[in-house]
Length: 110
Image (cartoon, rainbow, N blue to C red; front, side):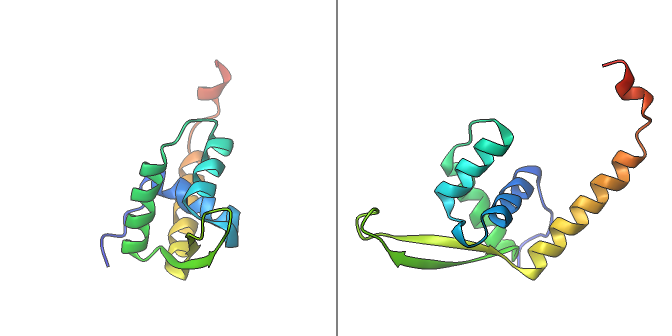
């Protein structure tokens, strides 16, 4: 298993997989990130992140059924592993802990 560091984009990809649950494949993940983040995301970046996340043990994948809409091609579907869920939980807790320590006055002038 490769390093366990969870980068910001990897976190977003993992969250999108969680949101999409059983419908998580590269195109749907890309669309979800674009919708939620209001930014353009290249599918190649999503593919790279998915590969890294699976290599680290945060995701697992399997091939779905072939569909007529895809010309008989099968989708690679992704799911979060227990290890990936724990990494997301720890990341969320760290962010909440740090946000709680930022003085409110910092945001009052903006």
